[in-house]
Length: 340
Length: 292
Image 1 (cartoon, rainbow over the protein chains, first blue to last red):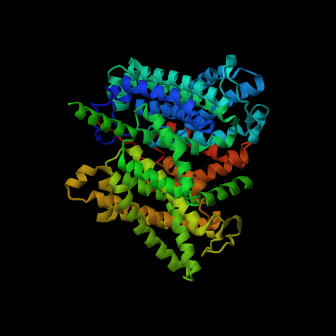
Image 2 (spheres, helix red, strand yellow):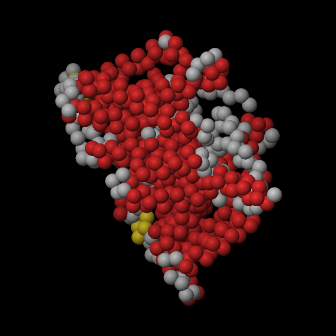
Image 3 (cartoon, rainbow over the protein chains, first blue to last red):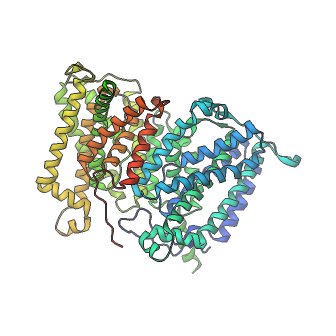
């Protein structure tokens, strides 16, 4: 349990994203193993609908993680994640349905494609920061559903109706349901991406990103290629979002332009804030929030579900303005005291 | 050529709506340094209040004044109750708070007044203005009110002590505090003024887009875009940005082949983004110089 003991939430003025030391971005080994064991064992005891929801949680978790790398890592803000998610989802769906590619192979394709798109989009975005960058990415997010509806790509995309994707069976005759198999498939990819992201942030490149986040001018004075790393952050974030989108398409078995509106981007943003900006494990806590809380709000009151959701969100940000990360830090300090 | 001038006129008249909204956006940005995502919903709620007052038989202009006053107080109350506790929280947490506020207001308005579309009266009439079919007297009146509002704001910020104090609190909070300005209340005042301007914008827009809880969705996007295009630090820029966005949107819809109603927004936004790439602080904004 060596995770986040040295984090003191600092109040730096004029800085959109507070500085998070890289050690504080992950969980300790012990905790990670416990969480992993829980994730592997859960589908054995719960109903298949819960398994399906857990799969969705992992998918959204990946997308929030991607935003977290961009915002928490390099300090850039994006409201355009839904666009990359859409590209990933469509890439996967089109390859599976129109070209009969195996579903597992479509995921790296979606990732690479989105990396390229994100990297290119990062170029003009370089000159913008703060709200201006938010607007540029927002433009991308609002344009995407309209672009997907364009007539001349309709033979591939299915236009407004979208595409239905077949659910894959478990391979090698494994005795498990389709839902359970998809869960483990998603879990395996999630773990791979998570470990890669943690390592990325611990590497030289990760330190370069954080240097840019904390002070761009100082970073460039130290020899960090600011333009390159900022666009790379965009690319990596888009790539991971694309992987999440591809998984999402396979899990939900359906893609349509209107599932990828700005609402999705806002949800991912909320997930990041609730999980704690810059704390990678928090991404999954945030994903749980954006999947389960709206349902909870709906069950409290149908007519006022939006209001209930808003009130719950307010409660969360009042209690823990730094998100789930703050809870983790607090519990760590508590355990530390207990040990002494 | 006639088509061109007509499209420009039509653009100006829709632009007036965006200009109103952009002005409210800039106001609150000046006061609190964030974009308030709930701005449109606050304006929508104010418009509903004025509609309700009129339903109770209060004449238009009295309802108008009452709504502006109520909105001003409500804006201050929202800041004091909901956002003051978040003053020390990270910026992104504040943004999440705006989204929560958005959701609450939208849902409550839907419950109180339901989601059916309502007609909204206009004091200016809807006859063609100066013989042009494209711009009605209402839209001309709307442009007039926006311009008046802008002039009023200009004098407020430039020539009153409290306007000066608000500008100081927004640009250098710590120094402002040192010379004795109550910066916390300046922020509340900014919220109140933004809510009041939002109410004016909502009341002017409602006859055009009709009254319903989601009426501001599209308008707010354009309002943000206009504010950012004009430069978030400049009220004049916001108004000009609003007109430019309206004109661009209409011209793109008319002259670029294959662009229907659906692609108007993406194209307008793409143009704005390209302007921003050349001028990152917007057309009229001051670039902010940061110390290392």
